Image (cartoon, rainbow, N blue to C red; front, side, top):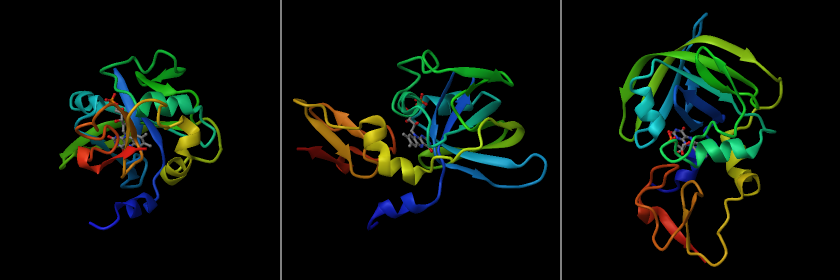
Length: 197
Ligand SMILES: Cc1cc2nc3c(=O)[nH]c(=O)nc-3n(C[C@H](O)[C@H](O)[C@H](O)COP(=O)(O)O)c2cc1C
């Protein structure tokens, strides 16, 4: 492996994946068939609580992230686990097909899970699109845009006076005496972290 950063050039969008009792930010989404009910796949890390939920829940929804989204939504869903906080407490949602959809999004897709494929670090959930709508016809946020603007969007900065570690793959900042065992965002091990001076 030489420079994994090239994978960031794979064009991907940003979505808030929700399901009953949880959800998280995802970028690993693809439309993999066409027709009236196209199939949509999403890869969810096995260590995420959302993965646990999707093993038994029958549906998921993807709220599409626009460039002007309130960054707090990305912070809440992408940098926290539902194991620790209630992500829905301070975020406005509307229930559609019994799933909470993010109001401050460009629109949504509700999918019924038809297959779960076990991969190395992730499970690939394949869903059949059963309901969808557009809220706002604005520009979507790409994963690349997020990577290039995340410092100003969500203030991923070292906290003064504390030891911090930066993931060399995704830029996640961990505060503590030691790097985390695994990056909570991209899953790489502790040796991929460097100390932020
Ligand atoms: C920009 C961005 C993209 C992400 N993409 C994915 C993804 O495609 N798949 C995934 O499983 N996690 C992804 N994550 C990480 C999860 O959102 C994150 O680990 C979350 O805290 C998991 O929460 P949970 O434990 O409640 O499921 C992404 C996070 C960010 C900030």
